[in-house]
Image 1 (tube, rainbow, N blue to C red):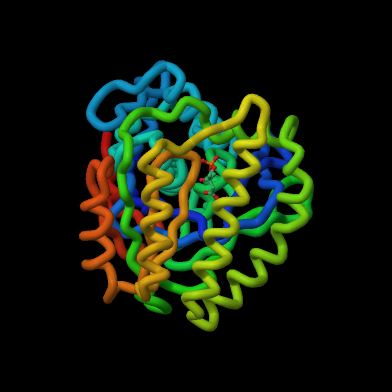
Image 2 (cartoon, rainbow, N blue to C red):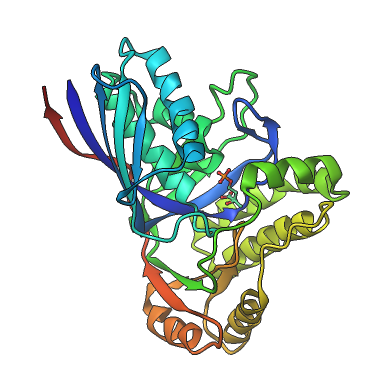
Length: 331
Ligand code: PMV
């Protein structure tokens, strides 16, 4: 029996993913580009144990809810199917950041679980296969297998085997800092899977969202290659606001922002107008992520901290690939 501990960093998308073309396989309807975040990570330890009757998940020190345990168990079934290991698993997982508040905890969680559980079950998967496996847990998790600047392909095959992420550049390519303004620590009301499906079914903006995505992808890829900050800022804010326009025009409308979220967006734009290279992006939650070259991070952090309604600001650089931290024979 093997006990394996892995670590995977969270990520945020610069070109957003919203919408699925296949729900059971979690195949995205659009491609995406993200950066992996150094200081926001999940650590997960897994052992498959013949003595256990059910899968057990301990999340941030407490026994997880039935819903979270079921979601994990379904994912572990995929690993049991692929490996010879049919045992139930004992899983301990910790996130060092607020869970389910738009900080992509599912991305780092499923990337970490894919790596740790896959290894503990005796599978030795290459990164591309790990990315495919992680995607089955959460679309954005496919990107957290890789560090730095990451592209998630939409893929063409029905089985999803080409719907995987790959690294565009390692983090050393460009020293960017992400400052996350926490504006609320409440759990979000609508999870991304339900929100995406509602948007697909009801938003009049869904089709144009899909057809306009390849242009954003091409422009963002090129801007990252050139390290053209202004262009990255323009495309990232466009993709973010377009995703939220799509969510707002869903019926019933998905409003992920609060008042401070909107104030922070204006503030970031003001900073940019006054000469500081910084832009914002926001996922399916109220937190605002301001991104700037590392040398500007001190002043951007100070400005965000002074904004009324901002609870605190988390600072992070770009992170690396998901890794195995410890591997031990037990029992
Ligand atoms: O991977 P999911 O199902 O949590 O969806 C992520 C969706 C966004 O965070 C809003 C956008 C993205 O590309 O990460």
